[in-house]
Length: 426
Image (cartoon, rainbow, N blue to C red; front, side):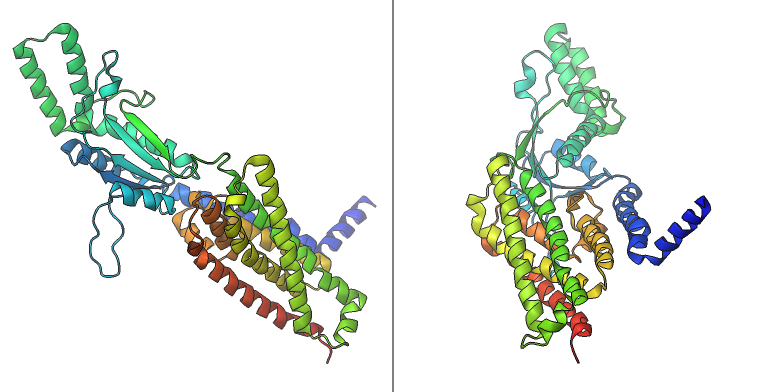
């Protein structure tokens, strides 16, 4: 009897396509997506951080520091913007342009080497920290990993490429207590020149030591926000659950078909196109209300800056809700039963949520996968919300996201209308 129960259970599972999809297809798809994400990072050695560089000092020491950083495989160091369509080589970044590029999301960090970096001397004597060289990191704190990684790589670059900085500071500090003779100073000066000629031959402190120069990290976007990461959570989770809500509510079409209500509706003056349009408007209004409730909750309890960004929230919420609602109608028109709808929703919603950035930040994905994620419409919705709440860009900057979401809405609604032809009465 036990074997009979086992055989019957497997037979029922093999006949149930929805259960099969939930048991085998969804895990495989998720495994594939996250293997692309983390496998791509492993293949490239480590996650490459795009770092803009501004050399305000233009000294041999600052140029040597940037050369060492450019050789780091974990960094994508850029000294100037990419060439335009004309092919002309643009001017190097200045501080204002680098700061704006970070604000626009083109890079998570910009390194500024201020004037005087090459002339500053490192002092190991008590009270000498005020005169030590300093660097400035302009950061977008939406990527919390990048500043830590770049700070560590700066330490490595200083130890491996600027050994003369440590030797010079050590000589000055020791001379204050040992009082070198002129002959000793001459010999030490020769040693210092030798180290400058071959900086990588100098041994530096251990990699775990403190950074020998001052690094000022300036948070360009999150400094004035009460809880800066709430916008990421609200946008990512809001769009994902909006997809689930739209597909679940769109399943009312299946129930109406199974109960005969759909046939009775179509026998009246209403057409299938009008019925779907009404469903689309209902789902869109439901989605807008759902997003509004979530963001109001984030404002009331977690400090999300909703009142000051209300116009931008409305502009991006409406097309997002339209696209998600049209997507739900497509799934409802594709599935024949509630079980099939559940399987399709779990498979597609979770997959595009992972790919679009709701589950894993897009900036941590390999660049190829970041470009591929633009194929799914929810990544555009997330980008729109981040423009509003994180980068605080003007409303006119939302037109690419609004246009893409509108085109997706029209295309998905047209597909749902075509798939729904099978339900029309002849």
